[in-house]
Image (tube, rainbow, N blue to C red; front, side, top):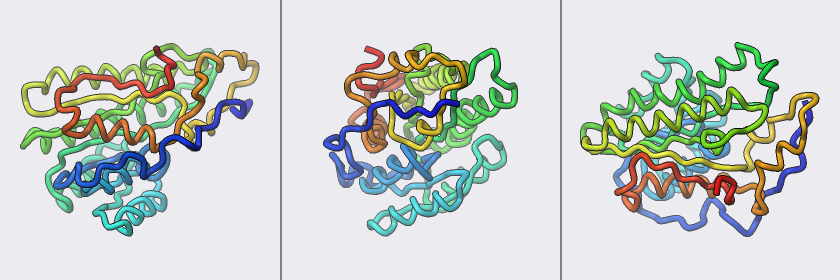
Length: 271
């Protein structure tokens, strides 16, 4: 694998965890954030906590999700750390129930957990394919399914993290594109199904984000590095906090008229 080391670093003058925070915007809300141990998930959990939500932080990495929850509580917020493997039906059932039992009725669900990687489609292993689909698509579905009974009992919102790979073709990413394309259509299907039941369902589609997930990608041997050119814009990468801001906007009452919407936050990549 060839490391990805030639892509644009985020602009340090742009978003931070504290940028444009709206204290109290989620007061009285109870949120679940998957993938809360790092990257976009961590930034989203912190942002929700800083704006008044009680946050259930879910991640398969127990140590990392404990750190996120501790950061929220140390800053004066309310958070619960839950170890959860979103590819396991029982693990999701248990985590969602624990979140609701401990923090109260769920009102905001942010599906951020995801995995990916580059591979020639002709060399993609079935195990690798199944793992990416299981985490990105099936895991998102399971969390939505288990959270919906709570959301339907008084209203709420689901935000699914999609990626530009769910909106456009991307070389060496057949499994990742398929999984995120599935999340795009899952988001739209749920939005239509529950549009008259007080539940909004939207998606946020990041472009390049400075996270451990992205930097662990590597081009497969023999790949054409120029294929990466179409994944970049002059704006380079963004920070996790910038995507967290978009997620929190779509989850807030400010976006009350948005359902079935996919918000691209990608520096103009899909323009």
